Length: 186
Image (cartoon, rainbow, N blue to C red; front, side):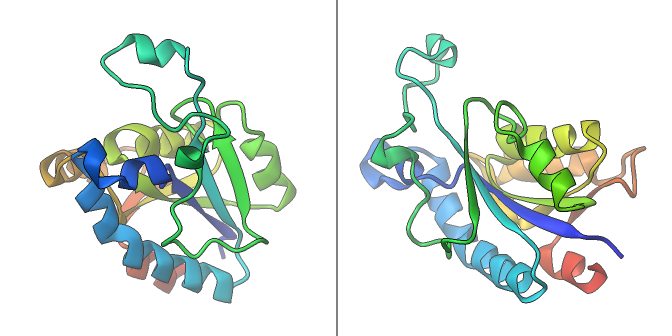
């Protein structure tokens, strides 16, 4: 039997401001009910809930690319969006880069709790969700991307990313599943 943790990636207020025009905003809103359902199911099993969110600096290296400053560490925009069922007992790990393992102490936290499987939800499927899942594998945790609890900047990108990993040589260590499918196994 697996001991799982649910990690929700980058569901921060900055991505939910309509006038910023992020193409991911309406798609991210659509997955909130599925994420909240997964949170509820993980809580019922007393499995940990972790929120790991972008927390960049204004002069961050990544902003020398086409990416515009957003989710600045300590700002309201870098806080978890209020529509998610985040409770005080949940862990919040601001992250300075794409993976939730980078500079956050996540590996140590998971190992101390004897976690064997990390279920990954949030945005964006093809960036931070995927890098977190891959880093879970690199740290010897099984990883599942929850397809109904994650999204990208378009449905096409989301679907293509998941299709690339549905049949992979790391099965069953790395899988793409719905939250309902995973709940039946854990």
